[in-house]
Image (cartoon, rainbow, N blue to C red; front, side, top):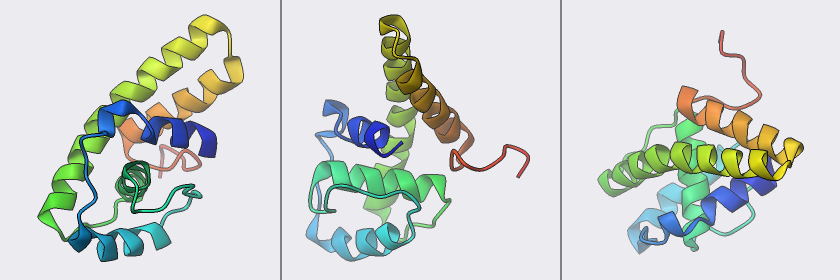
Length: 120
C-alpha cells in the first residue's frame, strides 16, 4: 500500500502543485495524523500530495484556503489516476498490484482508509 500510494503521489499530474512556505506548519501537523508511512518530506510535491491525500481520507480539517483547494484537486485527480493504474495493472496481469490500486481507488471514492469497513 505504501508503494502504491508513493507511485500515485509521484504522478506528473500533481507537478503543478507547489509547496508554499506558509503551508509547511500545517502540512507537518497533518503528517503527524496520517496512518500510512509517507516516504518523502513535505518540502517535496509528492510528499505534499501524500499528506493531503491522507488528510482527505482521515477527514481532517484544513485551515488554509490554498490547502483546501489543493486537497480538492488531489482528491478529484487521485481517484481518476488510481482507476487508470488499476486498469494498467489488470491488463498486464499484475493481480496483486491491481488489488492494491482497486482498494486505494475505493477508499478515495468513499473517503475512508482501506482498512475501514464501508459500514463504519
